[in-house]
Image (cartoon, rainbow, N blue to C red):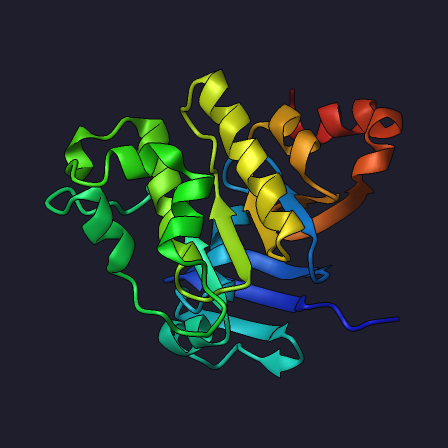
Length: 234
């Protein structure tokens, strides 16, 4: 069996004295879209921060393409080809769309060229001279995703990509995720919108109290709907 592209093994993590991750373990195979599902405070975003080296106090094992990352800082982790799109999006309001797009450095070969990015997100080309403050929530989310595609990353960590967006924009984000998967990207999503997650993901890990308590293939969702409702309180 092929080795997982990303393997998280018995990861513990703390914010100060607060123990948040309690043995987080899961894996993501190359070309998959995988979600972390769970209630607020379950440890999903903290897991992404731990993978990206943004959680100072962590232990366990996180490997990407067989390379151990747990002791590396975030800039070194990014150079392995991993990019993080946080829930707050991090758009620079004083910069226009083009400047925001060009800001992150290319850390690995294979990033998408600007014309390819504009094919994925035609709105951004139309708004290329608009400042970050002038963008809608949906446009900001598109820009946040587009920005990391230039870097050469092949593993994308997307934290709540549909949070607060109108249904038509959610559908557009879903189309983008499916197109990126077809182009060979691997994606790990934190997603509260379970119905959206079901339209894009291959597998779902259920997170509770800082650990994975179940894994449900997307093909088995219908058979596990009652169990999922219990886990997620939906």
